[in-house]
Length: 80
Image (cartoon, rainbow, N blue to C red; front, side, top):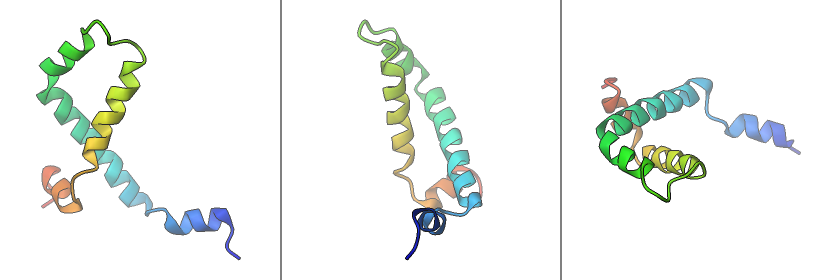
């Protein structure tokens, strides 16, 4: 019977794929925060924005990076 750690090792993407995902996420977040800087400032200055809002905003921005295909990610990063 396969152990939990063996299963995780088998199902985990290779380190290079993980690094590519992190690289794209970083690239994407930089692009989004630059493009929408004015809108993010408006959110940050809203009366109901507080320290609890920051992680929610970051998670929402990160989640949108996942909608792109591998081909789209490579193209955006200049790898195609």
